Length: 287
Image (tube, rainbow, N blue to C red; front, top):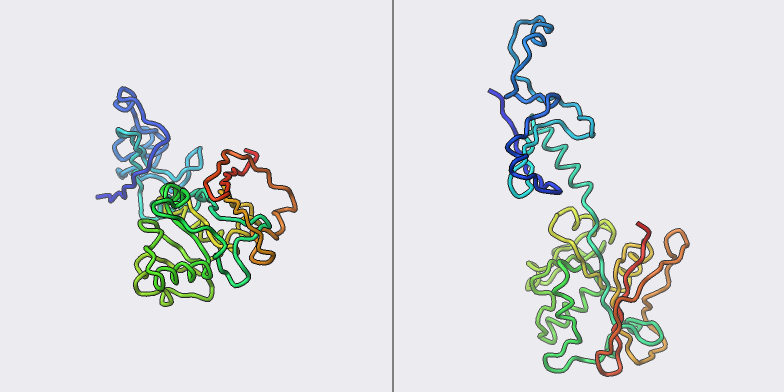
């Protein structure tokens, strides 16, 4: 008997039913269900009947050998000859997973600061009633949140001290820090937060490879500057606050990748009250 390992992959397009019924496994794949030419068996000279186990070599397209059958809904059933083939296929899919789209959503003073020197945000207008300046609607467009330890500590303090509801309910939150571990997360938030010692770019790649994260909200000055420097920010929603504070944490102050300019397009700009203007920028990259 020959054991087969099965893996299901999503095909780029569905195969019409008529074509699916007429699909014949390619000769070079070596399907065990193919009829074998007696002349080929005679050339082997061993007189033994073999099962036609798929070869470990790649086909003409560089794919791991195995029989693909097209199913309804555009699914491909890949029949692999061994666990090694499955591992190779899974590894290839994992490594080729795209980085999720990244978006920054932050308030900036007229002189370019996002916080005071001590990290305070008391210069930002506070929402009144159900008006959250559009933050809730924005949060519904992302799958996960990535921030640094300093920003997380501030949010955790608001929740614990001021009894503020957890603002990221239903979203996966990743804290990127080399000085913090999972044990440092307050018990009330331990099930909502994951700590990683990876770099910001590595953390994003890891999220992309899960297959469930397509858009990530990036928060925190150090985190944002790091990703901007590596040209890994795809969208920025900046709310200009009509105040100057003189000193503080700047959103800027980094060397661009390869010392080149980053071009952006303005996709929207609107006043949101209290003199604030929200502007959305999309990164322009050559395809």
